[in-house]
Image (tube, rainbow, N blue to C red; front, top):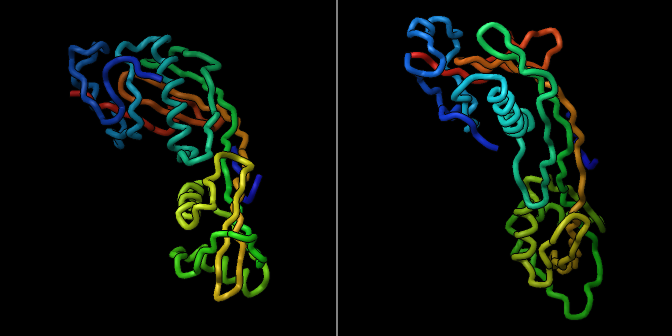
Length: 252
């Protein structure tokens, strides 16, 4: 891996977790209005993940819900994954134990694994003699401090390099392509191309290379789901019923 190491669809029912949705006495739970008093003090809460709460709470619907919810929760909340030009999210999982009825709800264990593939953009700048007919970019056209600093350092010392993180690769590839028609936007991992820049009469060749790296993941999470709350934990010593409150819906 380059410079960073990672540690470690769709809805059922009709009530969305994108907001804290109220339910009435006529709902499938059959509970009365006094149930709202039993909600945790920090209700209502939501992660805004747009995964639907089971309309009918039973073992099959809870299993489906947890598999859908954990996939989105791990991607958006735990990993905070962002799509980019070359990234590939390949994490998945399934319910491994349960659902088991506990009190008014269900306990479920989920196991997940896989990898996230991303790309760093390596920028290498060296002084050189450009080939005949090369398109020479003038330094005045460089309106990016990162590139400008890299080129100036190379012109002064003979060489310099830098690494652009995955989330910035698209912008820098597009920027380089806009500077010279000779630069071919990189089509995938392992590809590279070069452009030439005149830095105060010193010609610097700037090569961009897309380098792949990946992080392997493996994790287990346990959930408690009932008509009003969803709790989650990854701690061995904590029962799911006492886990972190991740979703809640109020009674009326």
